[in-house]
Each structure stands twice: as C-alpha cells, then as structure tokens.
Image: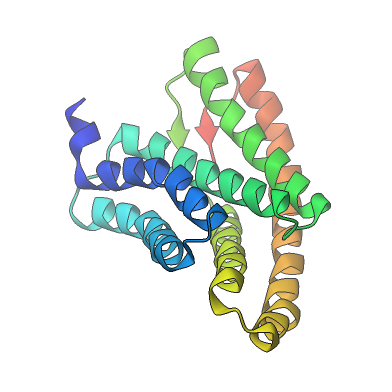
Length: 193
C-alpha cells in the first residue's frame, strides 16, 4: 500500500482522475482550461516513468497502473472525439479493440489465473501510445486555435499522415498481441506488453 504513495504512482492516479474533468471542460467549451489540463495529463505519462526510473521509485503496482492509465486516457479521449465526429470509425474501433484486449489481460492474469504478471513494454507499443497521444493533442488543438487555415494545414500535413502511421502500428500491435492474449487466457504467458 505504501508503494501507492510513491510520487510516480500519485502522478499516474492523478492522470486517471483528471480524464473526466478534462473531457468535461472540452465539452462545455472551457478550452483555455481544458488544453493546459490535457497537456499536464499527457506530461504525467512521461514524468511518472522518468521519476520512477531515475529516483529508484519503481514498484509493481506502478508497473500495472501506468499502462492501465494510458489505456483509460486513450480510450476516454478517443471515445469523446469519436462522439464529436472528429475521428473516423475504423481508427476508433482499432484503438478500442487493441486497448480493451490488453486491459482484459489484467483481470485474466490477476483474478482468474492468479498469476502475478510482469509488465514489459516493447518499443513498438510505446510508439503506438506516443502516436495516440500526439493524435489526441492535435485533435485537442483544433478546439483551441479557431483558425481554419491552421486546422486544415494540421489535418492534411500532420494529422492524416500520423493517423496512417499510427494505424499501421496499431494493426501490428493487435496482430502480434492476439497470440499472446490466447496464451494469457490459457495461463501459459505471464507478460502484459
């Protein structure tokens, strides 16, 4: 329980707790409050891991909470932006399927199979999460700028290319994760990646 009070874990919990208020601020038009909050939310994803590694504050609970927080942030914001018509259905479904499949691994391992698992993120899924955060940042910035020229420039020269690259990465992650998910379900794999 004391590990929960380590600074990296507090930042991770804060990231989870700030999702709903930040989406509510967007929805009710408080963009000038929402965007800095979202930037802080995204920065906590970097800071919690950096602090844990550099100040010897790594913990088992933190290794579970961090990917869960990432998935909750990504799923919540992509759901909101899909609801607003800002993201296309196939990309939203790709993110939804991948993240839900990975989140399902945790209760299967911990509660059903009673396996203490390890979190060993690989480089490509880290890139996938980073691209998701960049795409979410671009979507959020569209609310902030109000400039049609800027929004069109960002859409065609940044957003669409990143969406295509992110889609390729997400498909790769999903197709390489399916065999691991089956192994996790059978109890023959103990790594959440």
